[in-house]
Length: 295
Image 1 (cartoon, rainbow, N blue to C red):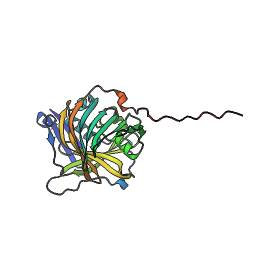
Image 2: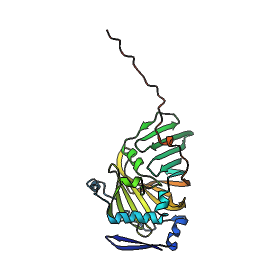
Image 3: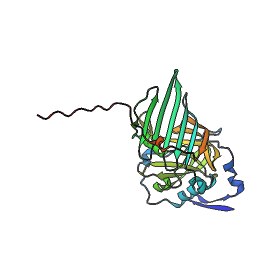
Image 4: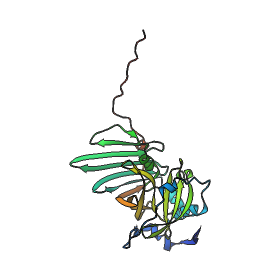
């Protein structure tokens, strides 16, 4: 029986990783994040966080939270063996329902394909990240040229995943973590940790104080051209490929849900054509001008 000793500013936490506790990884697990009583969730102050500098090294509390998360979701080895996930399901934003196909790799690559119908027309958009470049493309109703997405929204897409968190090698080597204190995700008490990424992009991780599952995570993005703190809130989990993964995620902006991601199918460690992540060549002709003849 393994005991996790967890020293935090709030006291000493001990969790026994016994069969009675790790049974969570074999079940569909649902959390109440709202409850009947009205609870205001804790979120970072965007203006205040702009002043936060990257720490020289991760603190012990943050490192223990990450270790505990890996333990309760299947173990560090199982998470390290999670090379990729291939998933599909439904994305709901307001009254719009879209089908999605998602691929996320352990080294940070992402591919998201959205398909939906509107007023009798078929739409299809693709967004992807190859490890260096974020790009997007409209393929229906018109096939348009792909374009790089270097906006804040594109940066958010490359840094904040839905399923594969950057908490094992190779992605975790880009991060330094800093413990921020306590918070609430609905009625659940959590610990907040900021992760500073490769370019100091920040992700806020909310770990449940009792189960150490990751209930909420996110960072800066933009909606309709306005900078917002946009994140994801998991409420249901299921064991897939030996790892406990979320199967239902709320989309949060300005601390209010505006959509939901429901995973209908998740597969792990699938054969993937890496060209899926690469920005394809455009279809528009390139106009070239003949050089003027010399006099």
